[in-house]
Image (cartoon, one colour):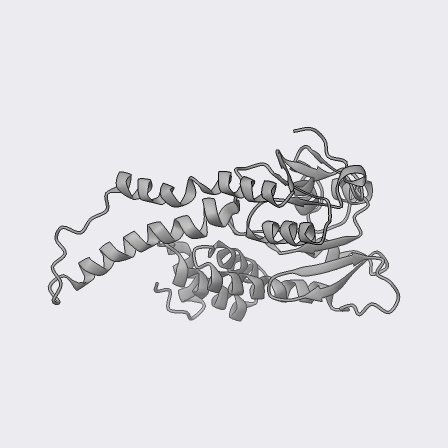
Length: 291
């Protein structure tokens, strides 16, 4: 994919083509903005291609078989109910296969330019295809203290002129914490301030305008937010439960046993597989340790 210079060709470039990105792109285009979308993966986004819709098809089949087996001998005869995996995959693909082509067609009909490739910011306004690693470096600060604005993270924040960070705090596939939030919370208040916090996101501003309401207890806010965001996300997406294991471990190390017990209990209530280590830790803290 060629480079995109948004200063010359577009008013807004949307990275990603899922439901949120599509909503932003189409509304901006309806307002007569010059719009482009960029995606490194097939168009359509996680939910339509790899997540929500696909999951509902597979979980629905599993629940049907499981329900039949549970009711066998209780008025239901289900000896022949089983999953034909190949047939189920063919059925699933009737939902997912058309998504990318249809998505790209919708963008084209709306007058939205499409690009395939990975994108990153190269300055305050321009985007080009390139290594996604810079964003990951900002989030994790590999090779330097993870909870500080120093080293590669500081260099990249300055190089790209980043003045605002809107972020969630977990990588939900692994349950890992994005260390950037704590680094921004620990940064001198003359540099970064926390200006917004809800169960889904935090917003940090560098040198916010005078009079902007800010939170003084930034570190405690981030710690509380981690529990809140993880809990809320599990309620919405029960299979994204690993963040609760991460927080349970964190609070055990911090010797905050009530919070450790609460997060480990949440993890074990949703975990698909037994975790004897977590179960034993919960028992020692006075929890049931039972799934």
